[in-house]
Amino acid sequence: MLKPRALMFVILLFFVAIPFVHAADHSSLPPDPGEAGKATLAGIDSDGDGVRDDVQRWIATTYPNSEKIRAALRQLAQDYQRFILGNGDAATIYNAANLMNNTNNCLSYIDFRQAYSWGQLLKAKILIPIYDLKHF
Image (cartoon, rainbow, N blue to C red; front, side, top):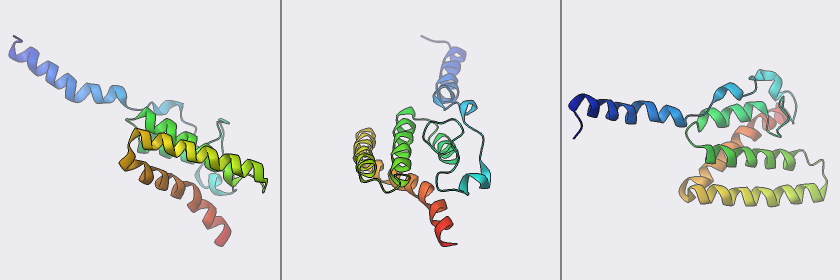
């Protein structure tokens, strides 16, 4: 049997320290592009991973406790960028749409009830600056 102090330490460790172990490491994120990231359709992708820096930062800070969700959303963001920047090439757009479908299946596998809302939030984050560019 654990002594009361040891038991309290274990409980404290479980509820306080362990959640921080799983939190995302934000030190590897690219810098915030600010308004310059919204100046063009492609945005700024300073690390060349296919995800706009503002979107990459949003994913990391919005879902800090799940690497699976972050990985799937980063992949979906890459797929959206391929689709948006397809330059009218039918094959590129078709392939990007197929990739989006596959990535949405991954999100559904992680949590079927939340997958749709995760995808819609990401789509809004990507498309709202684009909408603002075209209409204002």
